[in-house]
Length: 196
Length: 196
DNA sequence: CAGAATACGTGCATTCAGTGCAAAACTGCA
DNA sequence: TGCAGTTTTGCACTGAATGCACGTATTCTG
Image 1 (cartoon, rainbow over the protein chains, first blue to last red):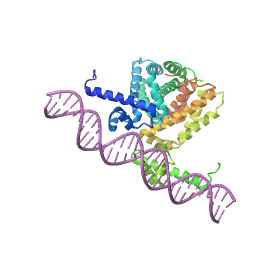
Image 2: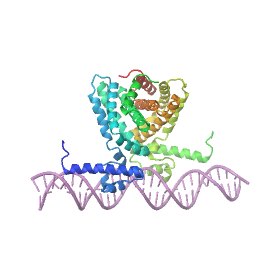
Image 3: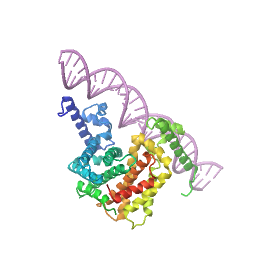
Image 4: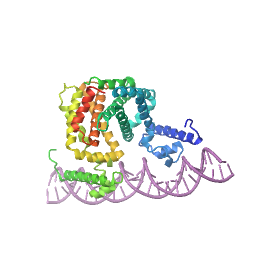
């Protein structure tokens, strides 16, 4: 559990990474739609069929590390004091995660470019985010000690993610944009104080 | 332009509607995934190939009337006084649209059930909503007289849609939930005043 | 109302994603 | 070295979606 252990694990990890590298390269050169899984597999030196034991779909390959992000958000939220107002806790958590994004800017930009050019990948990313919303909602529900009849947890989760998404979009598409954590903070602030 | 005119148009409309009816029925009875386009076409009395001249995909069939909703939102927004604060205008617009939803409850519930059971339809709906977000953002930008360097329009558009989505979700999944327009109003209010 | 122009439905072939299954290859360990 | 468990791989198959060409129904023009 601590060390990567055997050669088997190591190989698997390596292949997975290579698949990702090779595929991203092909996507950028040929376009996502014009790249077939057969080509990717061939370029990575594995059988076509094997591709699917590493990634469930072509879309998922692009978004391979997406699930980590949810974990980071929940993790940050866990560290906030229980007495802190939820909205403040969310703001702090998302700002912290935004800092992560900032430090991986190149990685993010690469995927974002593919997403922007490929509707199915984009749709898939939204779907994953909806999963985050659900998880966040549940977490907030326990935090607020409310039942499913209280709309607040979902409202907060949905809104917080909307702020994050809007900030990210702005940050990625606007030249000379402020740093992402700042955008996120401002976004949360904006909603919490005055709306014009 | 005023009247439906020719027989051609009439037939097309009728076929489209029949496809929708027949398909929804099949989806509910057999499940979305287990229903093939071939079956739908056969049940509607057309050739398989012809299906695709009516709907671009199986997903789109379920969400056929989705684009109207964006039009309604923008339309409502258009009617708000230009001097009104944007957030208030959004709240009023979405509340009005929520009333539409309320009156079509059965229609909505039917599609929602399919969405909930079929990831691809759900993903598609999110994708369409992202399109709304873009349109709303642009509309708000002109309303606020700002350029693309101001994150506000996108922030407001994304947040407003999040409130709408969260309210809808709550309304559809919670027994004895308040009316949708009320939920929406409260959601907007909640964000504009105090966040706990 | 006849015949030309056009739009629409349809069949066919094809590409490609994704899945199930069973055999073969490989790894880790005794 | 040989055994047990896992992974890779090939093969066959389903089903969505697209391109193309042909025939038929509709609309327009005179």
